[in-house]
Image (cartoon, rainbow, N blue to C red; front, top):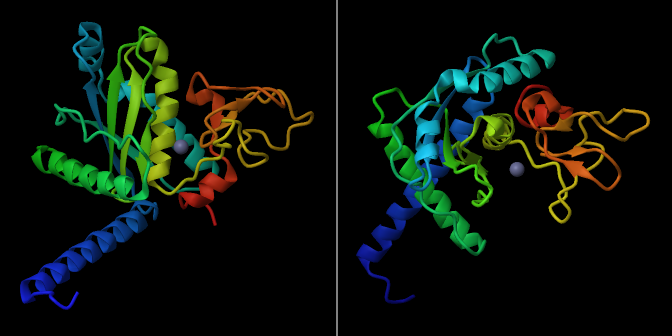
Length: 261
Ligand SMILES: [Zn+2]
């Protein structure tokens, strides 16, 4: 590296300063998002994927009330942990997104993921900048796929850094309950909650991933922990919850998002 030029050094310094700035900003944002001094402001950006007319109609009909179960669930669970806010999460629906976010990398190499995360944060920042509404604390991009069974939705993602979630949902009233479960799961990831299932089998880890860890006998469980994503109905089977009513926020998740010590 003997040949490093003056301008090369300056460019490197600027890059390092920029990275430090982004990292410090992410740290501050994540501290602020979990202090629960006031309502967490969350904006949902619905978008229809593809050209299906029924999907477009469904998405056009969504408003804040469509996500009433999400706000009610979070308010109820926060109260259970003693969070002194009537409205811990304030949801808004924005129409500011008209194009798909940057696609997640095919291979999950660390560098590819880091670059995608940076592109995603830049894209999300631009969305907020173009939105006439004030920027929220957390941005949830809600991509709706046709609910015809022929289009399996890709996996959803919640980014702690940048406070961004990309959720893949189904455009049907029948799927609204399970869509809510996905939305809340990814929203809690942005606040620092970790998955509570075994990635190899998809089964909830025990006891932290169980909705009712103290239940005797242990199976079948009636509710699932939100970050486990499934309800353990037997020692070998786990099913996806139909709605938030079949889920709970367990003590470990509550600690991770700042609701308890
Ligand atoms: Zn997850």
